[in-house]
Image (tube, rainbow, N blue to C red; front, side, top):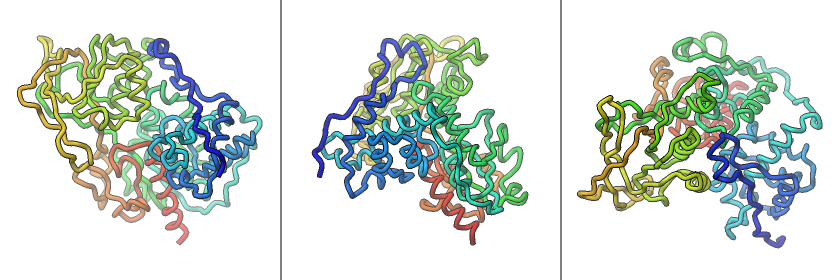
Amino acid sequence: MAKLDLNRIEMPRQDPSIRINNFGEVALGYTKDEAIKEANRCIQCNKRNCTIGCPVEVDIPEFIKALREDNLPEAVKLLKSKNSLPGICGRVCPQESQCESACTLAKQKAPVAIGRLERFVADWERSNKDKLSTSINIPPPTRKSVCVVGTGPAGLTAAADLAKLGHKVTIFEALHAAGGVLMYGIPEFRLPKAIVQNEIEYVKSLGVEIKLDAVIGKLVTVDELLNSGFNAVFLGTGAGLPIFMNIPGENLNGIYSANEFLTRVNLMKAYQFPDYDTPVKMGKSVAVIGGGNVAMDSARCAIRMGAEKVQIIYRRSEQEMPARREEIENAREEGVIFRLLTNPRCFIGDEQSSVKAVECNEMVLGDPDESGRRRPMIKPGSEFTINADVVIVALGTTPNPLISATTQGLKTTSHGTIIADEITGKTQKHRVWGGGDIVTGSATVISAMGAGKRAAADIDKYLRL
């Protein structure tokens, strides 16, 4: 075995004092020399645990080997043979709990920075298209037609894989811009929208047609799609319906769901107001409720939108926070205050019915619950208030019921998610598959991509019967 190099190359980042005043990308990416140096840390072990840990089964050792040999066109080819969205995955996927956690060097707490290398290769491709072959080998048309609903990570992945197999694919997107949660949910400073649109252009180059402003369930139903000539339908509409706490005062002015707040800021570019005519009310003191990546995104957007004080309210300790460690670190560097072991009990309004404070309880942790995390319990007599003139509720989402309510035979759970086979994505309705957050509830971009890839393989198998 090659000697282990434990000196992981760190990613350059904008200084916190500078980045809080702009929406430019925080992580600046490797230089070519840095990328090759990091790639040389890979010991090319035989077990390929990293590939096994990747939900879309990227040939990780192979693309890293090509990178360190300075064969960037081959690295691009290997990477995109399994992953149609590498520029996105290299930025937002939780590699630390997937491919990197399976890396041999992870035992020494120094895994190869697979995600950063993926990002470098994808960015190199985008800047060097003139050096690459533009031809894409697509097999002869199968004369089978597939409808994909939703242009989020699950839908884009399923569409790209099906197109690469020779099927005709049409995607219907409810919004005016393709990309789903990649466009409306993730801030520019984590995922530039130009990157998303570049990846979408690649999917379109495979022959995929995208129809915008097309709300399935209103414009046309799933059954009507199946009766209009589509041989199969893949549902990848995500989970866009926000979850609230249902506590007193939740209807006060100044209380946003994270969905609305992030959509206004990201998709509708409120951070460029008045050049874009989407204002966002931003107070001096903002409270964000939740502990996931969406809560971090909301808090960090609020800082950039001019809030003087931003506090995260989370009912467990930092150890139980579901957000990525680097996002917590970035938020703290940018001045976000963490009020841990704290849970809202009601919202307090002023004379104009606008929120002015959050009344909370202190919490203590008990035994683990069904999620494996220690259960938060109220500490008796611990009530106190936190001043806030804007509140952002980031407690997760569930699927919009529009499609399930208008599709006969499509079964759902009590949480509103569609029932589908975990491996194939096949639903209980004939010729309909599903994947991503519409099946699992809120999860990661890469898990949705994995679901889209598996469903595409099963759809292809069905179409060839």
